[in-house]
Length: 367
Image 1 (cartoon, rainbow, N blue to C red):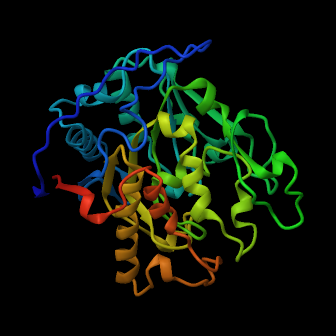
Image 2: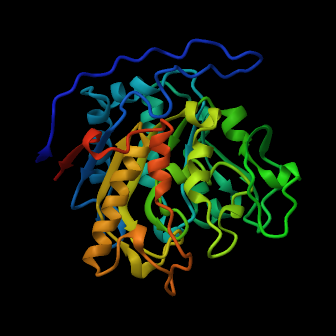
Image 3: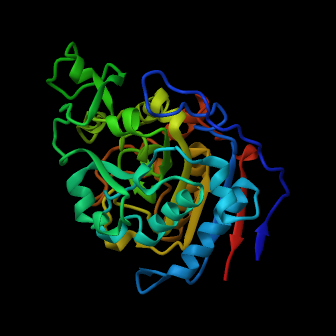
């Protein structure tokens, strides 16, 4: 059943044909990237049977994925939908989100659908890299066991640490330089001022699929599309929330997403809301997890996060809690203010559509 739908014309895309100098990767088409060809368009596919007893169900997930991609791109076939955004010769990174742990991580069925779609578009398995920042987080969720033959696993660093300025796995030539540090650090030190982008993004791939989970976050308010490709792709992140009152997420997240390698290469965002988290994030505290049974699709991460914040707020109100933006610290969320304004700031600098009147939300109920 269609909740609301409007007809739209498929956006014609040009293939990425320009060769990057001294690089095996082709330059991305200027019609792809952020906010992409579908600015303001968000497709929500819901299936009541997509999860049973906490386990994702293969056939409903397949239906949701197919409906989402075909409605987003406006083409009638699964393979054709992927061919709108990807083509043979692409090297594609899939940014997963293991921070919530095994109980709240992107599921293997969703990942396999993405890999299948990329293969349908002609992307070779060996040109697909499933990755996140920390190897130990990936292993803690068992993601390495999900990969089909020849699909690669990647990471930027071994594990989380409190300093986060190590350069192994990060590109010295691509960074955000911002006057922000932890108390006691030397702001004149370049490593302290800078957050460097993972080399997987800058040197190994030419397109990125963003696969976040729909979650609350104590610092940023929510961690959905924008946060997964900002704090999830650079080092030296803990400085933005080094104390319960020192919080710079509002400006840091949009600034990172606006970095050229990220903004140009992130062409598709698939938000996994089959299970979601309305409080206590980013870790997956079981008492705040609910089965939302919906997945969201778009090329515009701002519009996706705007819708995602609304969904989380609606759940919080249902549970007798304040909206994220006006929530105050408690035993499970310790930061003074959750800076959901990162979504609006991202819209203000052109990363997508924040204005509700310009967001076209297409909802589909599947069965």
